[in-house]
Image (cartoon, rainbow, N blue to C red):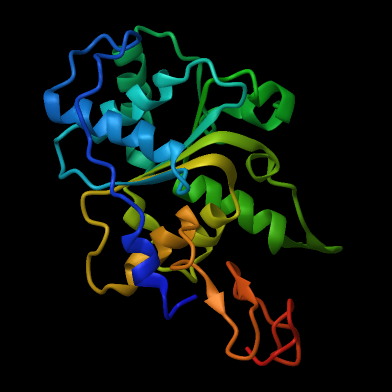
Amino acid sequence: EIKTMWDDLKQVQPIIPVPAAQPTGISRKLKSFQLEGMNWMIRQEQSQWKGGLLGDEMGMGKTIQAVSLIMSDFPAKDPTLVVVPPVALMQWQAEINDYTNGKLNVLIYHISANPKCKTLTAKDLKKYNVIMVSYSGLESMYRKENKGWNRNDGIVKEDSILHAIHFHRLILDEAHSIKSRTTSVAKACFALRADYKWCLSGTPVQNRIGEFFSLLRFLEVAPLACYFCKECDCKELHWSQNENKMCNHCNHSG
């Protein structure tokens, strides 16, 4: 598979974008290159990849293109989850309301700032069109579910409600925030489930090409995102070994 990978990819015709029609649910008039970007994103979701990376530079309207994409198949049966740096939560909420004239029902999932989040069930969350969470908030929920924390009577764990839901679409804003694949925040994003996945980043590679792997791993772009066994056809998205340092799937050497 790896030997023929580049030849196989050459057979996949790249999408040549054409300007889409101005989306009816968006109050702001999109520029021609933003309409092209929206056309590309819609067609990319219809391809085998089911998402991708929007790498426009800063200030060129990645947010409005992402919101236009959300509106392109509104209303979806499941919510869209947008993961953003903490400082951008309020900005994203304001821009979504502004661009859509308040059509989208938006929840900022932030337990300390919005205590009602603690009482919400998965059924409650599915009533929202868009749920927004910070990278640090998502990482904290993932860590509490997988590692727990110490109490007097031992380790206590708590289920992560965001990891229990299947989303319609996942959008990582400033996606280079997960550039280190072994960090807890990257693993928290990898564990999310959705029909479509998107990375938004003007700087997908900041220091070394290995950082790009994290984005491909989140997007599950096979075969580039996979780990391969040298002894059999085993191909896994997760790097997982047992106590004997053997692959959990095929039991060959890691």
